[in-house]
Image 1 (cartoon, helix red, strand yellow):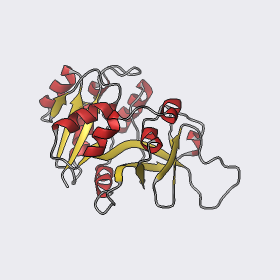
Image 2: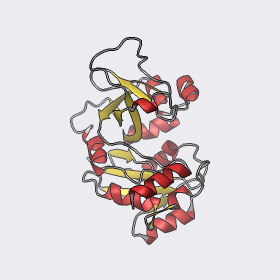
Image 3: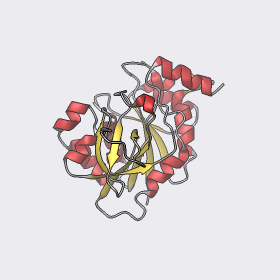
Image 4: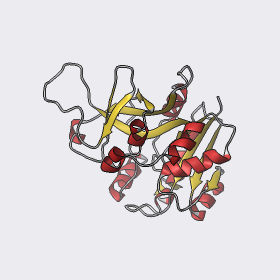
Length: 241
C-alpha cells in the first residue's frame, strides 16, 4: 500500500491564532509535528496542508513539503479530502493534527498497519488510550467505547460507559484524534451530510458511525498533548527544556 501522511495546519485558530508557527524550543510547532511524522516508517510521504502562506513558507524554509488548500474548508477532514483529490495514487491517508508536536511515530505506523490484513469494509481507523479519572467530567476529553473486536460503538464528550456497577477489568478510554482512511472513503466521507449525533456532540467521527461505517480503534500507551490553548503551549514548552 502507498501511504500518505497529511498534517492539516490551519492558521486562524480561535483559541490560539497563528498556532502552527508558535515557537517551541527554537522551532515553529508545525516543524516539530512534521519531523516526528517523518520518523514513521510506513508513510511514503509526509505533507503539510495549510490555508496560509506564512505556514507554507515556514514549512518550505525548514525543508518540508507543503501544499496550499482552500481557506473555506469548515473542517480538517475537508482540507484532507482536497489533498486526497490531488494524490490519486495513494491507498491510505493518515491525518496527524498540526498541533501534536509530541506525536509518536509508532502510532502512525500502527494506524497504517490496521489495514494490512483488514477486510475491504474497513474504511477508517483511529486510536484510544486509557482515560485518567481527572478527565472523566472534562468534555474536551472525548470518550470512546468499542465492541469486543475493537470497533467503535460510540464517541462522546460525556463519560461512557456510565459506571452504574463496578466491573472488574472494564477500563475507560479517551479518543485521540489521529485518523487513517482509505482514500476513496475519505473523498466520500467528506461529502456525506452532517448527522444528528455529530451535530449534538460536535464530533465529526460520529458521522461515519451514523452512516453505518466501521471505525477500527487501536489501543495505545501514547498520551496525546495537543496544543489548543496558551496553557497547553506553555506545558509543551516546559517539556522541551
